[in-house]
Image 1 (cartoon, rainbow, N blue to C red):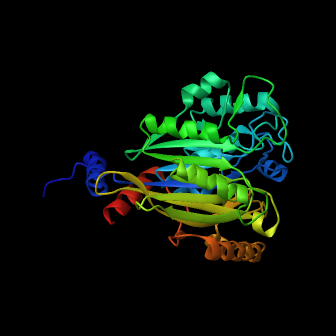
Image 2 (cartoon, rainbow, N blue to C red):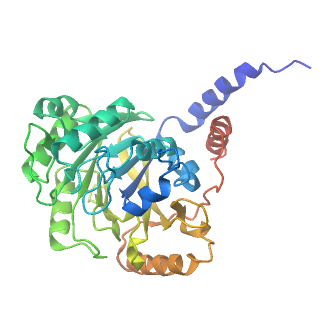
Image 3 (tube, rainbow, N blue to C red):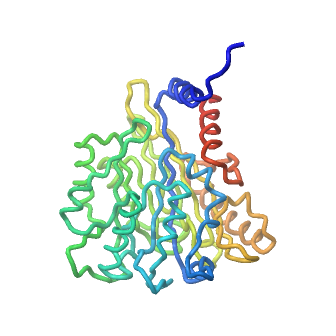
Length: 379
């Protein structure tokens, strides 16, 4: 019997996966507001003065890192000490380390808290993300830097995707330096979309901080702006800010082209305590090429998430709702889930809940590679 060269196996798996998958599909995942309230900071604090968030996202490691590209709204500056919660946030850098370790590829920084520590906090956040080699969009040190970084286009499994990020405001705090925050401006957004298309983007995702806090349905302004964005070339409109979920729509034009509108992803992690603010959704977007090779948004689904506050020696933990079995939080998770599902069942258009099971335990990188490759081969 001829022996197997084990150094050849990874290459074999990659080759077979490429042939089967053909680089004709890609999965994007978007999650909502990564908040950092004082209780979260306190729970992460360790006796040696460090801050440990490693437990917060372990239940989602497989789901997030299993995507081809994952995006999170970083709704706190890394403004340095003293670390503070609401109303003016400043978080330890290890918070971002934990998010990156979970598998997030892109950090959105244009939101209403981006100037909580003023221009210095904005710049320090960018310095920290750059030092960690983490991609980010939405805020910039100056206009020249914005012009250099945009359009922000990434090749994901062969799909050239542009990502853009804008916010409705910054809680009345104004810039006092050359720093740039991308505020919602229709003319600016249209120019950015056009620029992205001219530079080779096949698909455009506009991540936008908008709407009214705690409202489960989008307002007239959101609906109008969503229509404008889709009409002007946005293939995905991904909303945040209300801190609760809002409906999802897969719009299809007369030519059969899809455009996804997510009005609000809700909270990814927070210490908010009302029924509808205790969780949010992760939206998975399936990209596919049609028979002519054109890239398109093929499908989308949502996974419901719930935050279990720190207790019993555990830190805050984000979990798929089906994994929540803690006696203190099962009932509150049920209430959150039922409320969200009432909205989705009534108002969603052609987007359903993802029923796939998320693995509870973290798997090592080699195991993760083979899990993903085997999954591809079995399709």
